[in-house]
Amino acid sequence: MHLGELIDSIRVEKGHTKLWVAEQVNINYKTFVDKLKRDTFDGKELIRLAKLLNINLEELKDKI
Image (cartoon, one colour):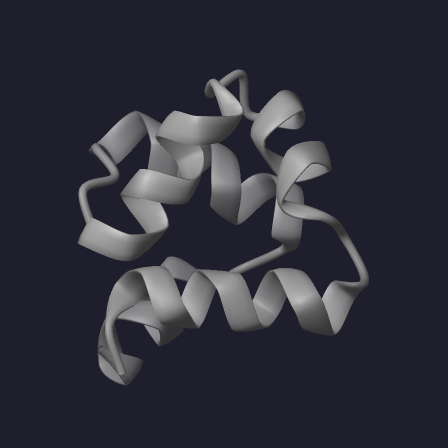
């Protein structure tokens, strides 16, 4: 599974929309959707997403 797919599945599991997540981590909605498709999140974005969605980054790296 790719990083974007994993983040998106966690988002769905938590019951959040893509728009809500994008707004919370201060990423333009279209950019967020593109980053999900292309796995192009930078480190700061990953940390913000991890905090927002309660993702353990150590566990995340083992899943990708």
